[in-house]
Amino acid sequence: MLKNKGYLQVVENPLASYIMVQRTTFTQITATLLPVKRIHYLQSIFHVLCDGFTIDMKFPLNMLNFQSDLPGVLQVATLMLNAGMVDACALLCCLCSEIAIEMGDTADIVQVMEQCVRMVPNQSTTYIEMQLALGKLYSERGLTFNAISCFMHVRASNLLRTNDHFRARVAVIQALGYMVRDVNLQQHDFDFLCQELVFAIDYFATAQKNEWHGRANHCLAYLHLFAGNVSVAHKHSAAALQLISVPNRTNEADDYYAHILRLHAVTLSLLGDYTLARNQLKQALVAYQQTFRTIEILQTYMRLAMNELFAHDIQAATNYLYITLQEINKTGNAKSVLYCIDLYILLLCVQGNITHAHQLLYSVNGFRSERGVSRGAVFDQLIEQYFAQIAHQTIIKSTLESKQSLFDVLSQITEELNARIAI
Image: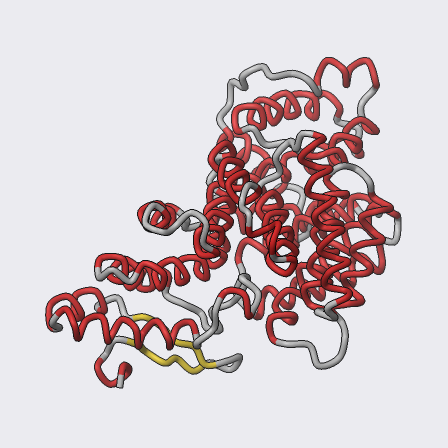
C-alpha cells in the first residue's frame, strides 16, 4: 500500500532489494492527510523501515536492512517528532546514525536528535541510546567536549548498575564512540573503558552471544592498538575474528566482518606479517566495495598503503596512497587526510627526503593541534623511529601554526604523488 501510494520505493539490485523513502514523502503526508491518518501512515512507514526490531535485538550498526535515502528518512523522523511520536523518532534516528556517519552527512540528523533527546525521560533506555548515538555523531563532527558529555550521561545511568546485558552492550557502543574520533583518552578513561569491555567480553561469552562477544574483543583491540599495545591488540583482534567467523553467522555479523578483518590486518602489519595482512585488507576492501561504503573504502586503501610501506614496496605504497587521496576528494574526511599526511611523511623518510618530511610534520602537527585529534601512540612511535631523537623532540611537540591550509598541503601531496604513481 505504501509503495502504491508513492511513499516508499522498492529498488532491486544484484546484491539485495532495499527500500527508499521518496523525497516527496514530506509534502505528500503533510498536504494530503488528516492528523490521525498522518500518524497511522507514519507508524506504517516506521515499521517498514525498522522491520519491527527494537535497538536491543540487533546491532545498532546496519540495523536498517536496506540502502536508505537519508534525507527522506530524516524527513519522516521530523514528521514523527511533530506528531508526538517521540520514541519512534528517537529509534529511527539512532538506527540512522551509523549511516549518517558512513555518508559523512551528520549535521541534519544531529539537529533532529538534539530536539528529540530533550523530550525523552532521562532515566529511560531510549534516552541512553540517544546519548550514545549523539556521542558518536558529535565525535565525528569534531565536537569532542559534547561527545564526552554524552558518554558521561551514559556512564551515570542507574541502568548500567541494574542490567548486565545493557551494561555490556553499552560498553561496546561507548567504545565505538571513542573509536570514531581518535581522542587523547585520559588514563582513567582508558582504564574504565577497558574494564567495561572486559566485563562485556565475559558477559557475552557466558551468554553465548558470539557476535557481540566478537565485537567487544574488536573494540578492546582497537583501544589497545591506539594506546600502542600492539601484541594485546593482536590477541583480541584474533579472538574477534575467530568469533565472527563461525558458521551460520547472521547478516549483521557479515556486515561487521570487514571491520574486524581490517583491524586484525593492521596488527599483522605492525607485527611484520605483510603478506597475510595484505590478503586480509584486500578481502575487507571487496566487502566494503560491495556495500558502497566510501569512507571505509578509503580507509582500507590507506591501510594497504601503510602495509606496503612497512614491506618496503615503495611503488605499491605510493599507488595506494594516491588512490586514498582520490577517495578523500570525494568525501572530505579530515581525519583520514591527517593520517595520509603522516603516511606520506613516513614515505618521504624511507626515501631519504628528511627536509620535506620535517616541513610537512610541522604542518600536520599544527592541524592536529587545532582539531584536537591525536595520531595515537602507534603512529607517534613510527614517526619517532624515522626521525633523529634530538630533531624529533623539537618537531613532534610543535604546535606552530602552519602557513598552509590543510587543503593546500593535500593538493601539494596529491601533485607529488601523481608524478610518482606507476603508469
